[in-house]
Length: 255
Image (cartoon, rainbow, N blue to C red):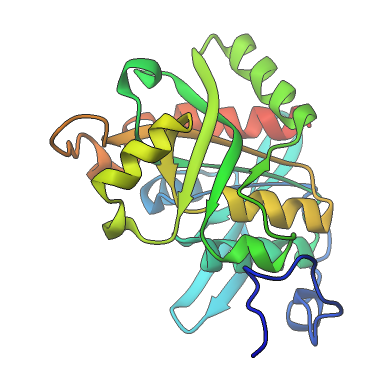
């Protein structure tokens, strides 16, 4: 019986087809691209007068517009990422094929250590690979580390903007409704500050495609107490939409 991707020690090549076979390059596509998972944040910035639709990502779920905005005399692309590693990665791959050279992603996460996270923005320095997508891009391992240069860029931007932050490990999971109490305790003991669904996979793809990549997170629901607290998970970051989006733009300019 053949081995699955979780059992193989190295990747197989080549792929039968790539994003460059399915997605056309877009003329004058911005070098910098930003994405998030909150439709409200995307719609808010899409409605601005200096924003223009330049492309779209197509799936059976429907079309996702890709926009261009002028920020500090630079064009920056932005679009809505689908939740979950496979869909998020597919969009990322196609954006690269369109012409993006640098990428910034941000979104909410579940808090595993509320005492440490508090109101800080979270910089994931590594992620536990409890999902499947990353294993198609890099060989199996328990964790994947973020690029040190990207971490320094993000730190410098946060400092210059005056925002507090904390660096730590993320737990990337495929199953939002299977974050069991024993596993939450185990991941916390391993040093994970937060749980989310895309970081490990996006780090893997950015390394595979050699695309400079920055991701930051902000806490939403709390999983560090005896009872789950939804907090502002239902708002998906809209309360601080401008803050997060402008931070992402600044990161893009600093990469």
